[in-house]
Length: 321
Length: 251
Image (cartoon, rainbow over all chains, first blue to last red; front, top):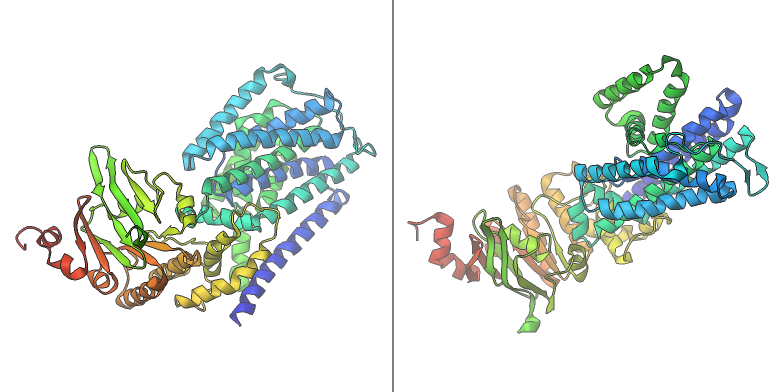
């Protein structure tokens, strides 16, 4: 009886998550037809993917990187350069940006993973600052101007991406695939070990797991997916600029993840949509937007520490079980 | 002789800044025995454990496991050789269920789990073995409970189940009965006796009644040095040991 109970609980939990994923993707597929601007949606999806990648490292690996903007920005610059200067088609431009982020992630991860907690955060921040000054000085990024009017081109030489709606569905497919990959990573044998390391690292080591190698792989996966977000974003918005490598961008992704719910699969998506929504729809308030997001963050940390999705699912399991 | 010894140290020493925590310890643990490491607080017992499993690097000295030098091996590699430790503070994965806790250890047999593209469903093949171990330590019915919600004694039992899942040749237990109620102590002691049937156990223990009933051989440490060795009867009559435990005047 106990056996069927456990299996039933596990199955029910994963069924709920799967139903949630299907609902979310379906809602996103019809969103442009119910009054949401595709341009806003694309921006929100790029940031949602960025936040999901970040959450893989923080929520499931227990590692707080304070320099994730370097992966977003690096991929953005490389993709924009590849599309504009090298004339690569959309898919290859995105791929080269993502690969650049993966390579950078491997280097930074190998360095940073040796330290824990605040020191890990400081090392990632320090390297991200170095990358910022590199991009500020190096000629191919065009400094303050950034790489502008990046051509979107055609997907596989067929689909014309200058159509906003076509572009939107390509972004949605990229987001969906990456989201499903993250879900799989969390629920893989690797994900189990990663959770064990997050829970009790010395014990995981004493069971024979080389914790550093698991953390490094998580770091690389997270950096790569953050890069995919940055690569997509620079081609969609036809711009790669210093904003994406600035340290405030590293802070923003922390905010999105905590607001939505760290360690939950939907949390970062919700957090990204709320923050981008505030920035886009309340842009009339100008500088006050920063104050508004700041207040929201303080309220979130004080009142609902598990984030929106975290609190909702806690409430749900209390009332359903 | 050498074949009979599973774990040995030569001149094991650990110095912290201006302070010698472990000094010239020669330890020899015979295969198939329960060997207790006792001594007053601050005697260097836990430091010893940390050195043996390379959670600390010794200043001097060498460590041999099954005749092979492991002084420089990485902690995870030592664990994979079959020398698995527990911790003084209960070592469970708090927000994983009891079943998942044990399964993490069973998962080790797959080798490295870097396969992030596979479904965790394939781990369900390990569930039956995990349930067996959970039942063996008296935790049947708690499979789906989060480890953090278990009572203290049960956490220790879970820890032993997890360690056993690795089928280690040798277990290092750091104060397995510390902070437990009487019934829990008896249960864990019986459990240790049972699991030691086909493996070697080295344990740090404060509860002398547990030490006297369980252990075949005792090493007494004081101020980082070996004070006495032998079985319980020999050691308990040693005047130096009595003095270390009760203070001068009783000897």
